[in-house]
Length: 115
Figure 1 (cartoon, one colour):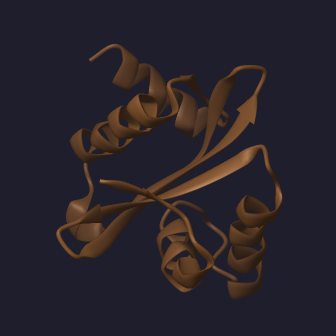
Figure 2 (cartoon, one colour):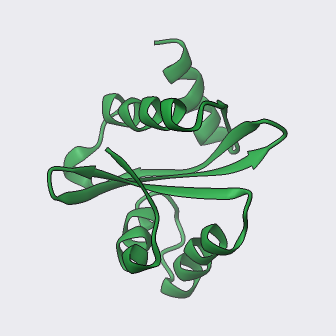
């Protein structure tokens, strides 16, 4: 289940986002999460399974579609199938076309759309 990011989950979001990027610097991760808090055109969701947050997915809203900026899962939950589950839930919730914003997210979104 996707849950809209709240400030109380800041450290969890930072930890999950760290799985999706090469930069592991806490200051960078904090700034990334804060950008989702402060910019109205950015949305961040945590993926909850049972009682634990196991994934994160973040978008920038642009011209009537959502650009996938971040998607990450805890190591024990990784795999394309689980990424597709996050994308399915986000598409259903946001009711917007989803595209990738980087080469990596674009490849994932294309595979998801063609499954």
